[in-house]
Amino acid sequence: MNRSSSKLLRLGLSGIAVFAVWHCGLTPSLAQAQTPAAPPEAAPAAAAPAAPTSPLTAPSLAGPLTANPTPINFDAAGLGKVYVTGVGSGLGLFQSDEVFGDKANNVDLSNGMVIVQKIDGLVQFYAQGGVYSLPALGTNYHITQRMSVAENNFFSAFPEGYLKLVPTDTFSIEAGKLPSLIGDEYTFTFQNMNIERGLLWNIEPAISRGVQANLTTGPVAWAASVNDGFYSTRYNWISGSATWTIDSADTLVLAAGGNFSKANVNTIAAPFQLDNGDVVNLIYTYNAAPWTISPYFQYTNNSHSSIYTTNPVTGKPFTKDASTWGGAVLANYSINDNWNLAGRVEYVNSSGSSTDGTVNVLFGPGSSAWSVTVTPTWQSGIYFARLEGSYVGASSTSLGLAFGSAGKSTSQERLVLEAGILF
Image (cartoon, rainbow, N blue to C red; front, side):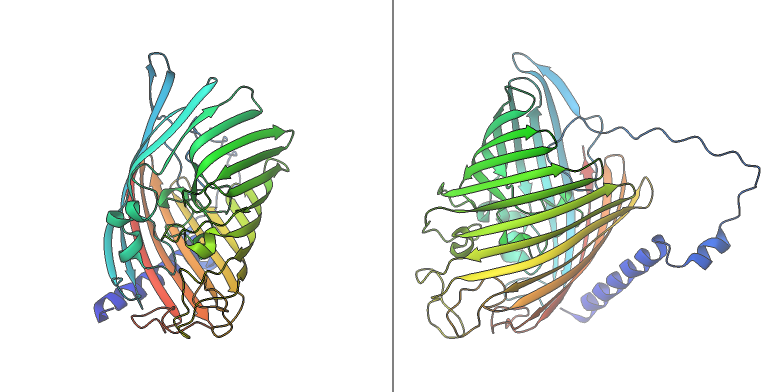
């Protein structure tokens, strides 16, 4: 990174820290000095009416961004009411210690998608198409995840779409390209608390082709799916989840998935060692204004392959499976109707060492990493803008598999800006 870009990155990260301190009330003496006391005889203000919400539940939004409460809709002959929504946004990503082939400064389109769906009746559908990028911590943005290459590397120009049969209020079946039941972060930038997805997301399936059944029994919602895991085109995965709605503010999710036969596929979307593996999540979410807080735990087991992957340190094929365990806390604080402050901290550790034949799923066999991300967000109606600072630190890395052009730096800072519309 050149000197001016590095200065911009550090100024941006410092600005985010100042924003967090000031808006979260960590300087009470200043706030009290600037805010006049209310007259003692003042009557309490009337409660503000609840903000309107969208009738649509897909795509899922973790916040702080909210969907248009009055989406475009029309009556289609023979179908009933059909909704048309979408998202258009661009981003600038500036980073230190970029990996070989990546760029220090990236300007790109992050989302350009239209969504058409029908949400009532026996037969329903969802179709999402367009362009997108997939920024994620610890990855090569320019080579694998920028808009012009993400479709070819991952989920095509039609990333999600399915037909859904809903015979009762408590049971449904859907088939097509489905969002994964695994993990606590969604695939696209606008769906998440942070612009970039985290380290744990990197070792989870995101979108799979398959069939899924959904059943609600009292406070528990069940889902089970047969699918192609990490988008491998081999239908050898079973995934499932149980979501317990404890009360209006608290939910607990147990989700798991894994392959029941080996798929000899190795792509950017479906690396052999991840697609031939298992993953388990335990996710708790507290959601009561102004806070949304979601800690979660993740465990994975990942298969080695002597066909596709070779240890760059020893030059020999990997011969041992790996496992990872990690956890994250995602949180969002709603400051007012227009401003939110979101953050994420996470840690992940992998088994083995660079010399014992264990397959790599992180920054080398036996490596570990942690990250912190802070994302102030502004939204007014359909318009939004976000600024994000992130830091990744890694340890026990293997030469050529970490950060920097030589793959031996153990940390990376990023500054990301995103702005657009949700219509």
